[in-house]
Length: 201
Image 1 (cartoon, helix red, strand yellow):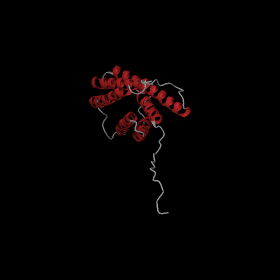
Image 2 (cartoon, rainbow, N blue to C red):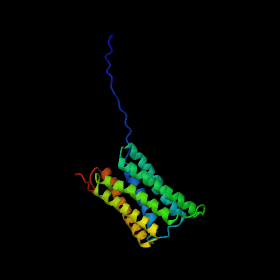
Image 3 (cartoon, rainbow, N blue to C red):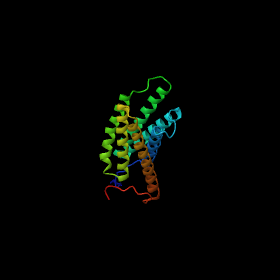
Image 4 (cartoon, one colour):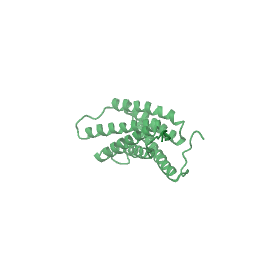
């Protein structure tokens, strides 16, 4: 054959990644519940086990989910999960070092500013959530309110504000559990088993 009759074809390989959001939501929910239920007096949260549960479930699990969301081009999930992943890693490291008396416990102003800056971060998530689902919006609103209340309690040594903030965060944890369960079931069964009520129909 004098002519090359072969046709050139462009092949595109794309790596398919399972949705990491349920994993990140469960990690957020477990750590947020455990980290704040003690403030409400549900259990004594000063043990090393609780510290490491928060650091690994809230920290590393969310970090893994967030990094996978970057590959999925999910800006909200990537930002929220990696951000809160580092939030809980910092919490775990600082709490553990304080627990073993290697560093002094954080003072009220430090705790207040830390939570207040994260409240600003979550406020950005609140605005973005209005393009997603109503359950997600409710979740991040409760997170933001909880962070602001804990910051107020830390600044002014107001125990009532701290407990209200913890209660708000526990509610957000329960909402996150619902969203994680809904996403997992809806994606697995290919239909709406538990509704999440998207803002855009």
